[in-house]
Image (cartoon, rainbow, N blue to C red; front, side, top):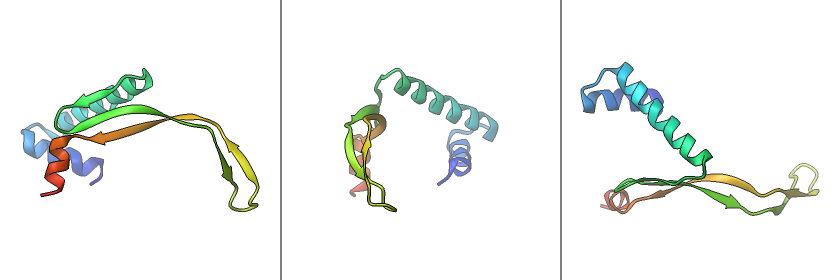
Length: 91
């Protein structure tokens, strides 16, 4: 499902117009992005949580030259599914 299909589904389920559904989705995405940039955790009970995790520095390899390279540590977004979502997927 892409963003357009998600907006259509949201509009159908909520009774909002597609334009309003797109605004709501964009606001949700923007709010989650801002929270993650501020290193906050976003928890949606029953659905899951978004958080920032640190990926440690490590050695990698350039696949073209097979030369070993250093990959610096970085912050990466992570999603952890909630209990209810996991149960729905495993029925």
